[in-house]
Image (cartoon, rainbow, N blue to C red; front, side):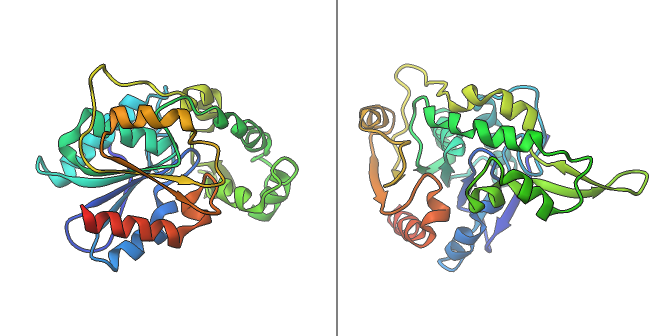
Length: 267
């Protein structure tokens, strides 16, 4: 089943964006529009169990990487070669894709994640709880949903991030209804799998250019990760974005975009 994608820019796409947990491709639309001003066309993916893409019965990083690879071959042909940008969960998908399908990846950008267990994913437990406890059968408005989430989620920006997945629909009997567009049950039950790193085959590595971007205020990239990144990605270069937390593209979009533009120009 095809993954949902959005194209931003003109011409043959040369940049692909993979979002993080509870996100969707359009989270990167603003940055992609700026890249379009520099003559780069981007494809924004909704990964499985997110956005408008299909749901599955399991959470599988290798499977997601293969699905994205298949979509790239289908859309761009056997000569596909893109700069792959992945954040958080999407960064792990991107790393696996580059390792397993290097012919598709001209260069790689990994945003605030490492090839290791990401223990910080457990901080999503209260977010899952808040979404699960929202009674969709009695919900009247998005404002009511936000007020309910505020009981467990203090940050307004995080609430809005979650609520992008809440969709207003009409049921077959023409009544208003609400539903989560992400596979909340699967993702909520498999946070440990989201946090995991499935590993790479011994001796496997990706030799192309790699930009590793960390939020200076984020705990996701730690000193013990540096050697592992260099082993898998010998051409890696680490840059820190001052003042940014884990959601680097939301906290410092201009600074991250500048890094991307420079990286694309160099490669």
